[in-house]
Image (tube, rainbow, N blue to C red):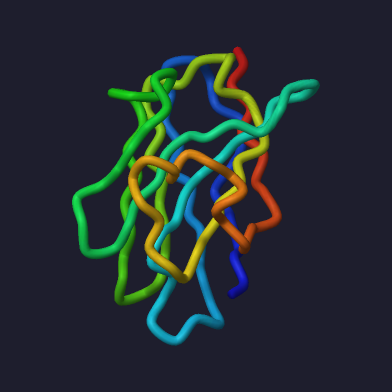
Length: 126
């Protein structure tokens, strides 16, 4: 499975961005997909995840209510709509995928995802 993330950029605080991640090389599309991010000098952290066929979409507390994860199963594209952006959202955002279904309790763990995109930079600054 290959993942290509895009849509990052520079945005002012309070602004919005939509990230996309195109998945290829999977016959039926990855079952579980997620977004993680890594800020300079910090560890990679979970942002949100989504599993096909269920309503499971866990979010990190820091983005809940501001970010929305979704996917287009027909096109195998994962999205992250980011609203009310804050400077602390500045990071490289990575999409991740697993062909198997990941149970909700461990969807936040990066080790559950064998496939990763290259990352896209999001900078929130005035």
